[in-house]
Length: 417
Image (cartoon, rainbow, N blue to C red; front, side):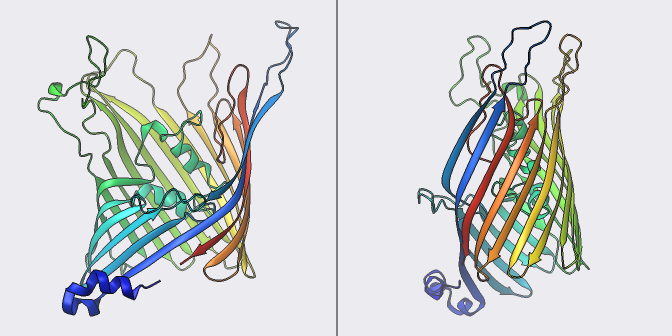
């Protein structure tokens, strides 16, 4: 929605530039009744070694909520451009998350995106907080856009650790977006080829020599030093994405490396490296989606230790489809991930790697170009200690209980403006 009043206020002092500038207010308000259920089971049974064992059955934690952002993320944003002449243009984009179910989150920040750009025949240079190149494949090639209970497991496994805890796989805070980034986008006139590259600064203090870095923990007392900087490069991101879009075909390859931790005293640097390949093809009656992904947490050592920390990998894939039906759209996807933890065997018995599979189904009914009703159901099956959920409460994992299934639904309405 163009706001002439806002444009007058913001651009009123720009004189002749007013006629060459524009400011737009836009947003999404998405509300749903959502239900989540996480079921844990006791998979132990009586054996000759334990003949009197009594199976404890299952335990389920569930929640029903009036939620937001189950089809599209709720947001409020401002964007604008100015024609600078000579083929150059400047632009800005400020986008804030909102929680319309309780009204608690609004224009408190612009954490979804906050960028300023310079555009021309050379492409676009973009500065600020923005999506990482590697996340784009996780959302563009997911029929559910990595949103709601139907979001793909590749995204869920990157956001949460093996046991379901938040914080990002391997401590990667740059999975979705990176702050303090410098981005470059190729111009759109390359015969269908497109691409972007990003470098995000860590903005931490660096010490020369590195041994002068104040440790986070006093090696003599074990106490945490207030204001200490133990990680000098944590937060840095380097990545890029290249693709080809021509008619019904869209395919892209992305790679990114994020520094998750850096300890000079231990001589270690932790990196989370992501590579993914996604594609879609629109046949008209059905649009097919697919993605392959690998995320690795590695630790580099200044001096090779006797027992190095093993790398941990997440391998995943997704296949999906959307089918237009009159004013509506059917969405379906199956995604699967497996963790390669390189865990040491217990009593010479191999430790099985955690894995999970997810099936998602949805119907979207468009009442207009801006308003839609939707219904989504999804179910995750966890094995060998994986604890991924469709959302909501975590699993009960005390005693003999292990995470098994997570299921849920979203019933909602989305309005865009």
